Length: 74
Length: 554
Image 1 (cartoon, rainbow over the protein chains, first blue to last red):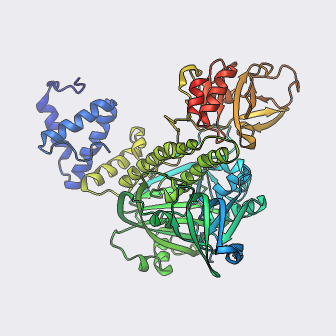
Image 2 (image 1 turned 30 degrees about the vertical axis):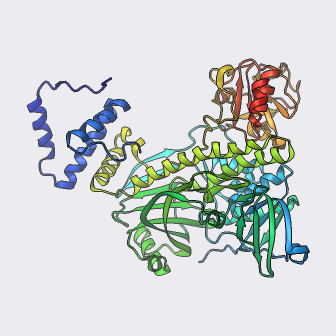
Image 3 (image 1 turned 180 degrees about the vertical axis):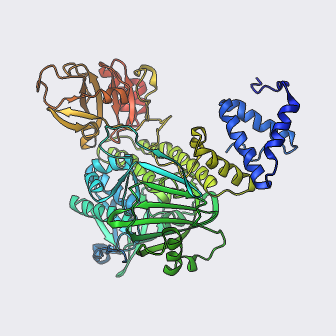
């Protein structure tokens, strides 16, 4: 019942990656972190599907080796 | 310019029991705690004809403004109790919240964007006024025995009712309570004496709260600052109250010194940073607090009930403490009266816990989430909080994420054992468990409010919708009929019928002519009927009074 699409979908992966790096250029640690956060919020609103977002959160957490979030139910 | 308010002193009277046999007394209903919740519950019971003894260890009202934001539902409850207009006259009405981030406004919100309600989203008023009015109103009923400087010092919970030891300036007496209503606040002595665990989340952050008299050119709004230049890295909340007084709330460092922070010169320095050197300020009550979000596992223990902060505690953000306590009282009052005076079965009282427990969970959830947003606990949390605020100014999409407190709304009592399942209910109607909603109506040609005519006399109401009010379903004994008509067949042809001239009543309740809803004495929806029959209404009424077996058999 996967709803999050996980097959490769980006037409220009290198271009996207470069644009992301470019956005972070000259930002300090805190500013970079806020940029990423703004990006997540914009994309989350675009997706707008709670089930997809929760699946993405769980998948991102697991891929970092962190396991399930301890307070995922909160 | 200190506060102009002088707390009244209520006279202690030597209780008769001190001179009676065995220094012992019986009382059918005992309320412990003369704060907002205890006084509200005692008044509600008195309005339903139930007498009570109210014990308070002190002899005055609250010191400082404390609970100040009275929500629409609370105001409607006080309207029923006869105090609503006083809130409107004395308090500060507001509907708008304004959120600032650093040196700019991030956005504002309107909590009551639609017209056609007797009461606004909120009225701000210092708690001591509310308590004073409640004391007056309780005394005027002649049914509330107000005992100041009577401290419930010990309790023994017995099957036939708790036995209290009450201490007074003249010594102690025993008070056997048929029913005990513990309204003695977050530090409840009754709860501690019974050894009941009060568990939940602890927040380390400290906040400075102060009542300040000053002339500010701000309108009556809730103003909330994140990371403002005058208080960097922290939050500030500002509310206008009655008497030209303002409520300031400054977030402090978790390790700040509470004693030092509440000194007037320290408070004034913070205000000067915010307002400049020229605004005259008069600092009244000031206090430094931390808070927890926690609750009792069960709100009923035999014949003892916990009501308000003694049962559950939340952060102040969202005004969910006082308002949920008043809703607790509103929920329990009619049930206790129905059992004591109306012959309802005692298990009806279990529904207090079944309904108000989930309400407490809802309030705690909102309150905890607000607190997590307001006081980020990690670098990631701070980055996300600031990212949301940075986006909010220009992008509406981020505004729903800004959480400076989700302001109190009445709880829908979903899944209540007193509700009749929605099988025969009108398809668009408010679901069972919903609180009542107001609407403008015409009564005998004059503008009026729907809520004023529901549950008068503390009874159940069958709220029926019709074209002209000529067709009315039968209401069983114990249920009052209120008819809302789309229009009048002829001017004045049916006295007392409520005419829904704007159509808002039908729209808000989701009913068309021929449909009806059964409302409990607290106004919440017990059942809906697409085609109300006497049997269906009687059965739903019996169920809402706790007669589940009778309901099944009907």
